[in-house]
Structures are given as structure tokens and as C-alpha cells.
Amino acid sequence: MISKFSLEGKNALITGAAGLLGEQHALAVLSAGGAVVLTDVNETSLSTIALRLQQHYSAGRIFTHVMDVTNLASIQAVAEALQASEVRVDILINNAAIDPKVEGDRGIVESSRLENFELWQWNLQLAVGLTGAFLCSQVFGTMMSLDGAGGVILNIASDLSVFSPDQRLYKRKGVEPGKQPVKPVTYSVIKTGLVGLTRYLATYWADCGVRSNALSPGGVYTNQGEEFVHKLVNLIPMGRMAEKDEYQSAIQFLCSDASRYMNGQNIVMDGGRSAW
Image (cartoon, rainbow, N blue to C red; front, side, top):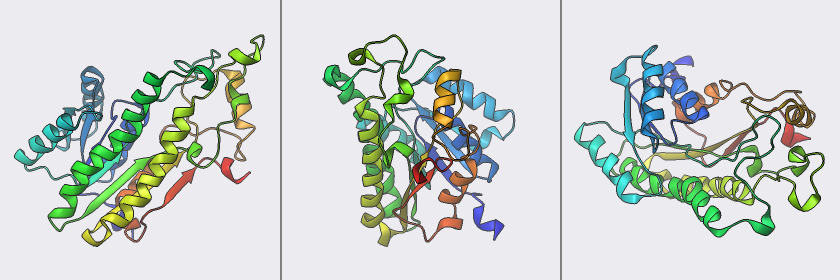
């Protein structure tokens, strides 16, 4: 049974690979024997992560391409380059997103309240997090469906795809109600939309051997302040946030033959928060 988790001989393209979980997804694939195609708009960060991964895994299994998921021509250029190098994308991990973060005790960075949320922010964040997943699925999913070998599309959603953000987590003392920081509307819309896209793709190419599922992680320890962490862990039955590497096994399961009969599902890993 363990052999079904192997990704040997498989290539996984990861969008937003320069981000925190992007690197973790790459480690999951590499440690299961697969190869990764790391893509991101940030060339410097992409190179840094590739070099870090090469300290533990063969450089021959780590490819990098600068790619803008909001630009169809950029995606097609990467697809053509991979074809020319005879690198087939067997797995697509749609991970790219603009995620406003809590840093220290400052609340959400680069966010605004619904009343004042600007259209350009809405358009940009949806373009990266949702339209980007659609475009990459359109290009690479089509390629998977045409050659008879099938493949896997894995959308990285969030626990906020199944419940609303608790804005009390971001509340700051001494700030009037109309100016309190919040998790922006775009995040919930994008992550919920990814689950809908997952279900659509799951039925669209099922007869071509292409499976589609979503993984919805909960909060991960990064650089949050003590007050925020304290409030959040009280909402989680397990009493803690996730370590950044705790989603790797789920990635391996969803990308491998271990889940070959799973299709169109949203796997929520949030320490039980959504069960409360």
C-alpha cells in the first residue's frame, strides 16, 4: 500500500512556489520521489527556494520557470518550454494567491474593510487566486486530458472556504469599530470559488483520467503576534495552529495513486476548527 503514495516518475507544477506553503508542497513531492516545476512571478525568491531544495534533492528533479498566473501568454510559454524539454505536467498544484497576513500584533497587512475595499484590490486578488487557477487548469489540464495519461489538479483552498472569517481575531484595542482591521472579502470569495472550480473540473475531465480535488489548510504558525495566536487556538479543538510541514502527507496522498478514487472533494485540515 505504501507504494501507492510514490510519485516517482511524476512531475508536479506548483504555482506560487516561492511562498511558504509552495515550498512545503515541493518538499512533499520531492520526498515522495517526484520532480517539481516551480513557478512564481518573483524570480529572486524562486531561485532561492530552488537552491534550498537542491541541498537535499537532485537538481535534475527541480525545474524553475518565472510565470504570471494572471497572464495566459506567460502560462502558455511555460507549457511550450516544458513540452520542448519533454517534461510532462502530471500534477498541477494551484497554490498562487495574494494572502493578507497577520504580522506580529499589527493585524492584517494590506487589507481594508468592505465599505472601502477598492475595486483594483478585488480584481488583482481574484486574478491571482481564482482566475490564475482557472487559466493554469485550462492550459495544463487540457494537456493532461489529451494524451491519455490523465493527471491530477489540486487546488489549495482554505478552511475559510467552509466558514466565514471570525473578524474578532483581528480586532485591536483602542481602534474605533469602523477602522478595525479585518480579513478582506476577497479571501473568502477566492477560496470558496476554488472549491467550486474543483468540483467542475472533477466532472469535466473525469473520462480522460484527470482528477481534481482541493486541500483546505487551517492557520499556520508564521510570524503572528501572541495575542492573535492565543485567540485563534481557542477556536481550534486541538489547541494549536499547524506547523508548516504538517500538510505534506496530505499533498502526497492527493497527488498520488493512494487517492486514485477520490475526485471532486475538499479536504479540510484545520485541527477541527470547522467541526466546532
